[in-house]
Amino acid sequence: MTIDPRIDTLLAGDRPLRSLEFFPPKDDAGIAALRQTAEALKSIEPAFVSVTYGAGGSTRERTAQVSNMLREEFGFAVMPHLTCVNHTRAEIVEIARAHHARGIRNIMALRGDVPKGLTAETAFKDGLRYGSDIVALLRDELPDICSGVGGYPEKHPEAVSLETDIDNLRRKVDAGAGFVTTQLFFENDAYFRFVERCRRAGITIPILPGIMPALSTKSIQRMTELCGASLPSRLARRLAIAGDNAEVVEFVGIEWAVVQIRELLAAGVPGYHLYILNRAKSALALAAGLAD
Image 1 (tube, rainbow, N blue to C red):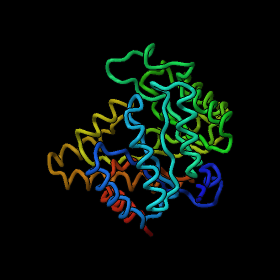
Image 2 (cartoon, rainbow, N blue to C red):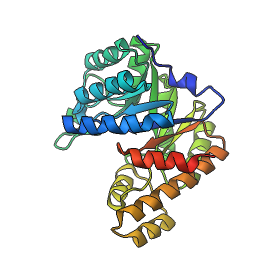
Image 3 (cartoon, one colour):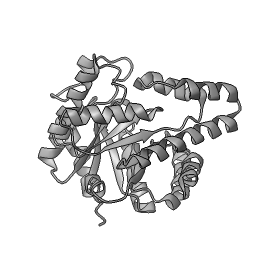
Image 4 (cartoon, rainbow, N blue to C red):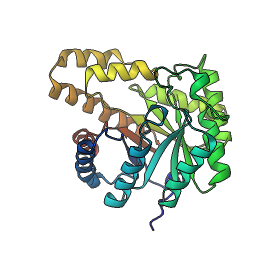
């Protein structure tokens, strides 16, 4: 059985990493399309890929299915997401042990979004309420698992202040997190300021910038509202000029992301994580734009 390398070990290397995020499709037709996407993206050789976990565990089986497919058919090192919502400690351990038994050694530990119709009081149980709770549980039950955690360069929407947000991140690190992947951002200064605040707070683990190219004006506006990221006026103007022309919008989004990533790499970031929304074309275009 192949054992995936721990991501914190990969990040200790000399070269910056490139990684990709997939989400589990809703049906078998979507799985077939994702298989084609994964095949196309083998050429850019990501250091690892992550697989998201639906609200309240709604994609539990699909996340496992996609994670296994990406490992077994395409040879990717895989980092499944795992969230607190609607799970007991025993269920979290069961899911993590199943991943571990297949050779997976990395898990993205997240609080998770509360599904519509539920409150925090009903969505969280068994003492699991924060990403730090999953990190601590994995550390105790499966100590050879590397836990990744999320960070918000422009503050988590629910945090009362930047300082509180950094304190929450430090709790995840103190619980045993191996690295941070940030939420999307479009101005690199937001990332640099975030890293500086983290270092001042004693957070020393690697912080991977998360990049999402603006491939649809409506979807990127929705995403920025959900995660508390800001859309720079320069980018907003370009997208407005592109209007409903999908090809032009994609060109603008890819170009902006390439400039972002080049600047980040020049500044010595440990790598970058691409939120590609299961679209091979955009990831390939980014890789081509970054090629020397």
